[in-house]
Length: 460
Image (cartoon, rainbow, N blue to C red):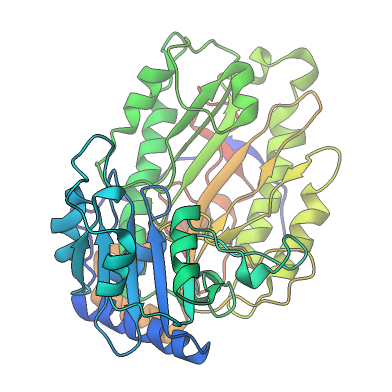
């Protein structure tokens, strides 16, 4: 790294926002499902059952284009047979219209309480109708899998609702097959098609603009609700709940907004993200150092600028064939100390679910590769005089061939990416490898005083 990062006047460019979201073709879902079934065969399984609910829809959504609302659902995939989605009555139509082309069966037990369930076939009968047979070896796909040091019989630890797990176990041997989808090395969702990456860029653009509106519209005296209303969401599914909190609640980071009035000088944090994206920022509701607590007046230089330098190194280090262990070691050398107290991994794979998995771990030899989306996610939790700061945004990695295809198929998104890279290099002094593609309209931009967003950390 060259130069000294400090707070400077920085004009954040207007990159614009797209109007139309890139589409995923039915053929893409069919190709995904074919690869999934190949993995099921390789593992010696006869079938797989994929569980989904509103909170845990990513694997189902990636495979089928369908995710349940209000209800739960199972995708039953038996070797040599067509896939079947079992869901509640409200989702029967959307499930039948999935881009995968799966048929659907209705089990009212997946629906809301109080609806008529007296005429329903028992779930075991529906699973048999979907193709599961006695003695089948079944892979259960939920939303996580486990290490042998965590639970006894990690392969058999199934993270599905107990009643579903019990029904499957009555049919045949059941093992946890979630790694087929989510393992950071060879999981099917660890690499992303060009059109899905373009979709994530669309969503990151809009999500980061929501956070930008909050910061530039923030005023003391607003309630947290009024500040959060500046997000102006599109209505597209989120990867996590919108976050905004001030004062002592801001220390927890995950809080939803309330009717608390935002005070000048208060600690502040906010985050917003659609599927495939997340943008977060944190700081003080002040215009200058004079409004900070007396023992934190050097917050911008001593804390925020040093944190930003770590983020700049993250951006400049990440790339194809770089290991997660290298990123982890570099960030821990800067932030994993009593001053910053780094919380969680300093980055992770980004997908429909905001945190799919993370190769960024101590000693990890898992390498990043083309077609991955990664979140810069470094959260300091200091116990000193300073409140935290945050610069969460997502990037993608594409090799030369992938970049050429992306630019040809999605020229408007490519123009935004190139403009972001230029600003980060010339306006902020962050010079990334050619394969690093910033998706957020706030990438690299970090104000220290939230009521003065014309000042941001830069070493340019």
